[in-house]
Length: 174
Ligand SMILES: Nc1ncnc2c1ncn2[C@@H]1O[C@H](COP(=O)(O)OP(=O)(O)OP(=O)(O)O)[C@@H](O)[C@H]1O
Ligand SMILES: [Mg+2]
Image (cartoon, rainbow, N blue to C red; front, top):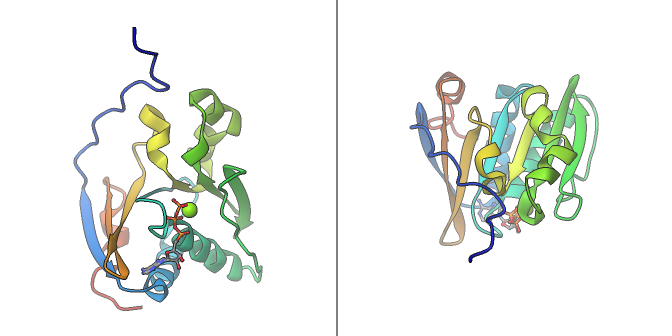
């Protein structure tokens, strides 16, 4: 008999209401995008940061958090949550959760970390969201980072709450 899976099969993804594809030729382009996205975000938003090891998920999250903190006059290093799984911040009266779920052990740990509540109450930046299986929040914006030569290619896709907010991202420069 084969061993029980750690998670049940995830639900099939709903077809996205919006899709934007961007070229990010160097780390500065990723930083510029994070700066432009920061003012578009609010508590209860979840960004699902996907892509292989080294794709730039932490780089993007770090600059997004630093931008939000800077608006409050705060300066933060924003270390990768590789081992802590979650790091939390506060800016503009909003909680920010930065998670790296690569080492998540199972659904019980999701509960233990308080992630389910945070998906509704905080701005959540989640690396390796596939580790959540069916617990992945349906209202999340997917950011799929891919390697493209020396740079990166990013596909953003999300449901009904995102098209209006992301409308300016494709055209405008940094
Ligand atoms: N647009 C870009 N073009 C080229 N390099 C980039 C770009 N964005 C980020 N990088 C670089 O990619 C490297 C890895 O980034 P990062 O640590 O953020 O990856 P990650 O996706 O979080 O990986 P992990 O899955 O291990 O957490 C960093 O050195 C960063 O400077
Ligand atoms: Mg990372």
